[in-house]
Length: 387
Ligand code: PLP
Image (cartoon, rainbow, N blue to C red; front, side, top):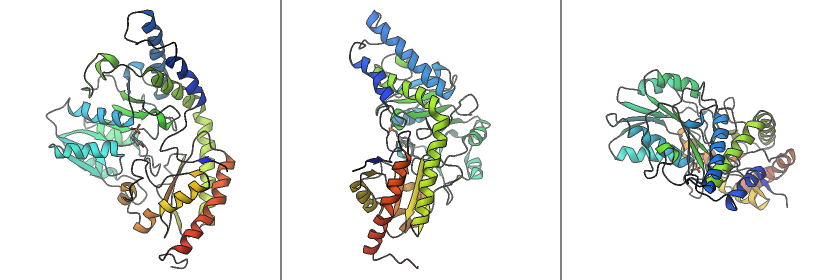
């Protein structure tokens, strides 16, 4: 049976070049980069190089790159690090559609005396910038707004938002975990103070992330201990994984331009064919401002989970929401915030593509999905083709 992996917003396969680059660090290159002897010095050189590779992808200074254990840690550290630096301010602004790494952290802070504004989105998942503007006050310490949404792929106007936030002297963090390695992120022009990335979303392994911290930004570390990462994140560096994320950044930078075009064309073909072949289907999210690899599509009167199971039996991996919310039948908080009708939320499927998807993969999904939807609708008491 053919295997098609179309769940790349959940995680990606490790690129063979990344694995290759990492292997020596499980063998001969095992020294601690902080050690004074040559075992450590050898390894430290590779740590410096990986930092340069990450900085190059973001057009940042290597000194602005802090390695972390994942996207969640980068998000938590960004928020914690800012709040702890401005203890006199108690208001945070974020959105209703953030990943739980930001949303649940903010709700946790709310229980501890912070005031949190969660901005709403419209039917297409777009923010209302006037609402953002009027939410800002002298008590606002930071704004944390994601670059691109993991469920719908909707890309927020981070440049415009950053200008608005920075003009009020407020700290701005963006969770760019889904944008990293997929679209250009240039911090030399992007008005952000902090930005999060996660390696496993762009062909590095799970368990390594990056926090970009603009020079001069006030920051108080989440992990306190050793002097690693210039005192911004204690703990002996996870050298093999850091080398891996460095290489993944380097590959993303080399391939980005051609991949964006190729992957967008694959996604657009999938979208067009599914809309043509399946009645009562709708795309969720702003189709103009979207990651090139993501399609979130709803099929009325069918359960997303049933679709996923039948797709999986055909060898196709997709998702019915973000990886962290699937596993529960809770409807997606993102689609709910967008006001997607209940019937359509439950029948939503997310396809997310990567460098390793091909035209044949798309043809295979197009062949397999329509009969699955027909079958499920025949069994559904709620289905009526004419209603
Ligand atoms: N932020 C976004 C937008 C995500 O999509 C994810 C993971 O799905 C995270 C943060 C968390 O990243 P990690 O899995 O590396 O902790």
